[in-house]
Image (tube, rainbow, N blue to C red; front, side, top):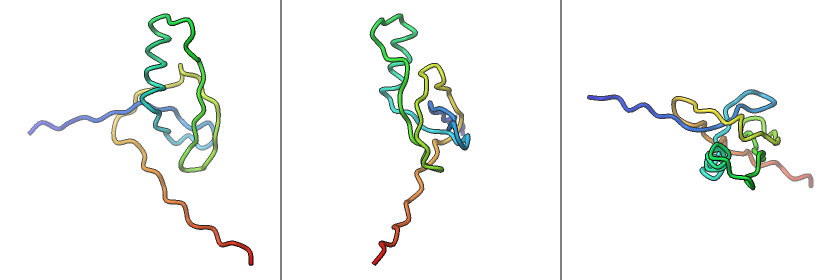
Length: 82
């Protein structure tokens, strides 16, 4: 049996260092920049699903990570003040 190696594209969170999965659109932007597209944006916004920190990242910071992408943590419903 051949083990299948999985990988995904993402960026490390600027605050906690956890890996943030990026969308296929961000990956395609990286390819556009590598191919010399003049109008491709060089930054994008991503939110960490562990610490909830949102930041602006450069396309060049996107890396390939081995393994499964991190799963989103379920938000605990906050109690409303009565």
